[in-house]
Length: 175
Image 1: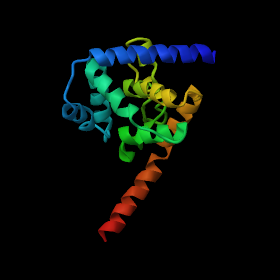
Image 2: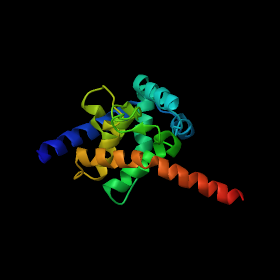
Image 3: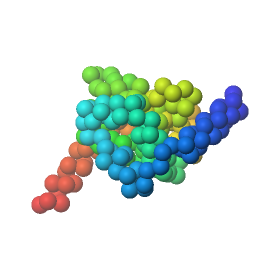
Image 4: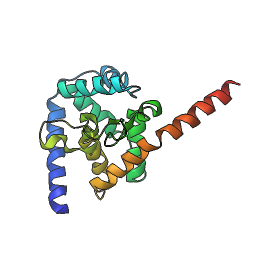
């Protein structure tokens, strides 16, 4: 089973490399601004508009995957946390949950999450979570999808606590 997963991952990576080579070249400054101007996402509306951008613009999707691929970590959980910090502010994450329970915005079906997860390239129906997982799996192939979902869910669940600490720290620095 793991052999077939690794084979699929290698296939995905080789297809991605081919796509990146054939993509129209932007200068490095333009590449940086296309994605970095939109991140981190601050509101649900920004999530939806960025999601739409990545779904409709293949080049933006490739640039986003490239942007998040440069994020490292010491272990799978650290990598996932660092990726989510790059993508969502704590204020935005407070309004989200993995599955969308309790009237929160569900992020598990987002195209941008699939970019991190990596399944996007199995078919071109982009899914954010799958892309995120693929990025993490490329660095940590032993990570299971369930663990990835747990890490994301925990990070989203504690967003309110992080936001509260963040605002208290900012208020203390201003005094």
